Length: 139
Image 1 (cartoon, helix red, strand yellow):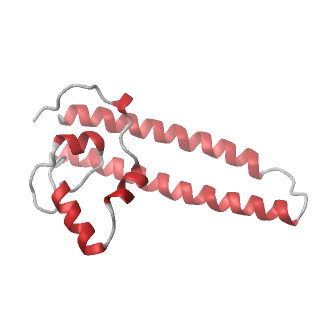
Image 2: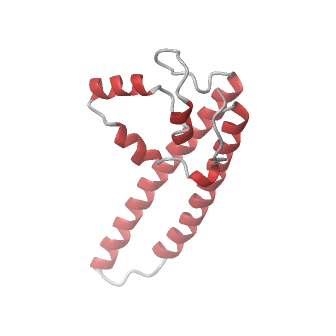
């Protein structure tokens, strides 16, 4: 993926994430600003607040990852594996524009740490296909 195209995709991801955060905060404010009727309602409200903060942390981390990827584009290191220094496969970048490691280094890290690539997918999700043009990647 060319740096220009990657930048457009990442900026679109950031825009969508910021809209989601704004919308979820509006919903959160409506849900948790209501009068609490009894102890069970109070427990539900507290549980909802904890989930909201968990999502906020996840969203905040994703924003950080997007900003770091944008910084790598500006520095000219986007698409270069931070472990081995080789180019990350364009197909991987298309699916995971925030990827910092090539698939081999990611697999090696998973062996060492016991973490699974699935966690990366669940954490950040695959890129929404509507964000990218369905053309071949530039090498």
